[in-house]
Length: 437
Image (cartoon, rainbow, N blue to C red; front, top):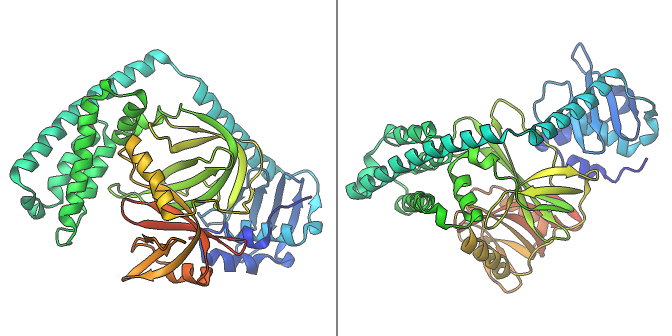
């Protein structure tokens, strides 16, 4: 059985560093029993201090993990440990048919995928049209109400906004939710969280108001815009519209998973969002896979930074398509061997400028850079290219010293997100190693 993973690459899948140490400690044969494989799935039972052993299983084809332990993060320390055992000593795994508890998991995954495919194909066009018409009616009413609210703000002057409490913003945000414009509500809540004592308060507030106004004007004039621009506006207004728009370009490629960011959604209570960036080897295109869940529920992880797969993705309709969904995997996940990128900062930012000219609501953009050197810059960090141009790193990035140590002061490849005026590193490639932040 050929396992294209190294121990280091497996440990790179860990949700955080504590899982790395635990996985190494657990990857000893004496702690495992009933381990086996059929070259498609690997399984085993780990007996810890609990009364019942943890049942751990890995789908080698899709790099999916399942364990009965109490950990809600995926992959857990037991899954990583079992994978390490397989890589280090595959001969200790018995080749036979999976036990019932593994077969049940395989079958549940198959049924889930089948139901998902069936749901995507069964559409009642009449009901769908009625729901869409009602939703548009509600959103239009919300847009009109928000338009009056914004005009009142301008007449009252921005200075008065610093005196307003949370309820001032929340009342209007709640009205947007009632009118099925939840992303407009999120933007209002983001503005309510801006600290009025911050020196950049006015600038940030004006930026937020400008985004809202541009959306309102675009929505009112949507019939004069291209179908792609209309889709961009609807996507920025409401999630329900968003779900209907994954019917754009379908693209088969070898997709590199370059980076992932998991964070609480600003302006939404108790919601997590995972942003996973892909890059097509042949198409030279980026794709953004988004997943959101309540903070109490684990994210379903099937894509891991530092891996790649052959597969088909479908982009959401857009004037500059980035958001996409994975339609089908045609190969197992395997480790990547490189982070591609632009050779200069100016070349990367030129792509960002082109994107904005087509889609002005892009709030983050993928930048991948080759031969870049991390350095201290003013009171923070930055990246410097071969032409000595500087790309400032966001103050929110806390691994500046780690990034510098990885580079050793030498050029490395770095991938991350550009957000108007600063860069958030998500991964790096140095000395044939992939590092995820």
